[in-house]
Length: 421
Image (cartoon, rainbow, N blue to C red; front, side):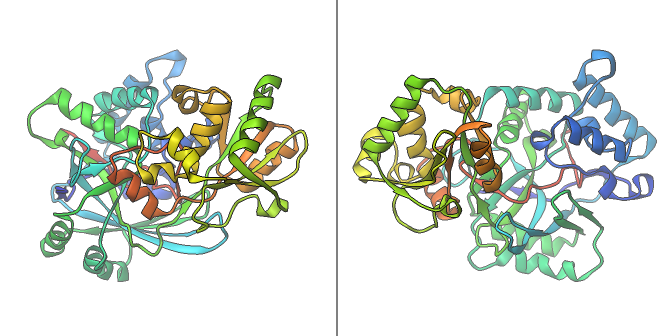
């Protein structure tokens, strides 16, 4: 059962910062050094100063985040709300497929639970490094700075029906991100509306779409503090699985340069043995959805010939992944990992998670260019994972390989924060 509660937020005072456009940022894990510098230059109060902190002269970045946040609160740049509220967000965006969408959802605080049926489920594996970083930041700031993006079933559209009327009013503020996504934010404090949302989600299971490391950090932090309190909850952005604007796009796999001749030979042998190999045009490298078979595109930097690879027999994957569920064994990314990365190339799960020998690209054009330019030795072009398949794997209690899903757009950081004390 999902325990969803309104927030007594810590948030920016618009009179002090001008607008959220100047202080919001993408999630910390997609920000590189040039982007961080550009965001910090927009405003001395940009959220990267606390969510992706850098201390002067090699100092402690976590102490910098703690001191900066305390100073902003003291100066009135940040204010703490007395009354609880939900915060509605709509995102008008153009997807990587060129189509226009609007995603709908809301910010709330959700009780931290262990993973399990009827509670909260993950869908991707995590790595220890990011969790340690986020835990140290949480200890320093004693706040959730960046939301976890989660999904919930709502076939009758009960939640959005309760929240939609507020979107006819002037938004609290609007943020347009670097991808052109227009994020509009509204505050909902009416007790009856909040109660309707809580009733709609009370019996629902939540599926984490993005932010697994942050959720697992929140769980560790809640256990460290112990007992009941603000720390027993975590900041979430919640969207219905049935939402018309919910989209999942693929993340393509790249083999890094300088793959050994021995591994190239092993790769070629495995592909010919396990897959039907069909030459296609370069524009057809990303297979269409709905074939019912495991498929992906392939091109290497030596021959630069585009192919579509189709698993010859599902029994091959069933044998390689005998300890996994049927849903997992039919997952393109899982079969690629088992038969090719682990089987042919001898990678471990740790190698895959830490990108030793492989890399990822969210852009079809970038992945193709990486091979054609020789920046990568080869690329596997993936198709998007249907949300029903994501649910099925999660319900089996399993976590997908990294980057099996690309939920677009990201949820901005800096719109609202959740204090943990």
